[in-house]
Image 1 (cartoon, rainbow, N blue to C red):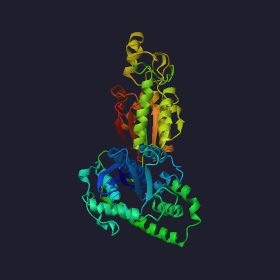
Image 2: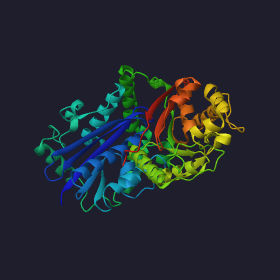
Image 3: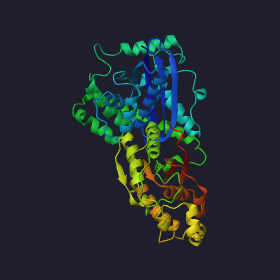
Length: 470
C-alpha cells in the first residue's frame, strides 16, 4: 500500500481578506513531489484557507491512489487538533470543511501531525503564489509556480527542486524522525503545548477570535514564562508580517471590476434558486400565492448536486431561505451537507402572481391578454386578481437586502430563494432597468453571487446552470 505525505497551508491578507491555499503531495518512500495544488479563493479567513488547503491535498492524494494511506503535516495547530478529534469544531465556517475532509479517505487511513511553520515552506510558497495571482486578477497554475523551494528552509530541510527525490526523501525522513519516540501522529501527546500554541497563533491572527478563545481557555492558565516569550516573539512576527502584507497590498493592482481592498470584506450573498417542482418543466407561474409545491425527485437531485458544489467551495457561513416549501426543502438539503442551520426570511418569498398561479404564459395570454400586456409594459402593473407587481417586489427585496447586508457584514451567506427575487437582486446590483428582468433566465438550482461593499458598490458573478455538476 502506498503512503503519501500531504503538506498544506493557507493564508489571508487581512483575516478575513484576500486568501489562498497551497498543498503538496509527496511519496513517503522517496520524498518525490507528486502533485502541487494552489488556488486564490477570494475573501476568507486564515482558518478557512488552511482547511481548503487540507482538502485540496487530500483530494490530490486520492486522485493519485484512493487506496493509499496519508500522513498530513501542517503548521496550523487548530486544523491538526480538530481533524485529530482532540479539539471540538465550533465555528460554522470550519464545520462543513472538516466534514468534507473527513470523507475523502476512509477513517483510519489519514493521520495528522503538526509541524513548525519554518518546515512548511513549500505549501506556504504555493499559498502566497495563489494570493499574488489573485491580486493580479488571475488564478494560480503550475506554469506560474516558482521552480524551487525557499532557500531558507534550513539544514533540517535540504533545499532542492520540489521534484528532487533525494532532497524530498531527506525532508520526509527528517520530519518523521523528529516525532517524539512512541508518539503516534494522531494521539493526544503534546496536547498541552498545542493549546499554548493556539494562543500564540491567535495573537498572530491565524485563528478566528472566537474559535481560538474557546479552544484555548483551558491552556491559558498554564502558560508559563516560555509561552509568554513565545507570545512576544509571535507579536513581533505579526507586526513584521503585517508590514510585509501592507507593502504587498500597496504594490498590488486590483482586478478590473472589483472594489478596492480597503473597502473591507463584503457581505456576499450566494443566491441559489430552488430545485425543480412538478410545475417547473411545464413553465407554469409558481409564486407565493399558489399551491406551494414541493420539490420533485429531479429537484431533490439538483439540490444535492448544489450542496456538493458548495461543500467543496467551503465558503458558506450561514443559510437563509424563503418560507415556501420548495426553498425550505432545497435549503435543508444544502444546510445538512454543510452542517449549518436554516433561517427563514419572508422577504425572500416569490412574487404573488394572483390569478395566473399554475397557468402557462400561453394560458395567461389567452385568458387575460390585456392584463398580461400591461404587466409586460410596466413594473407597476399587477397580475390579474391582485397579485404583486415587480415594482412592489423590488421594494420588498431592497429592504430585505439592506437588512441582511447589515446582519451578515463581511460574511458569505447562502440565500435560497426564487426566480424573481434573484433576478431582482442581480438587477439592483447592476443598476439595470426593470425590463431587464425579462432578459434573464435562471435554471433550477442555479447559482448567482452578489457581493456588497461598504461604499455601496456591488459586484455580480453568475454560475447559472449547475445541472452538469455531479
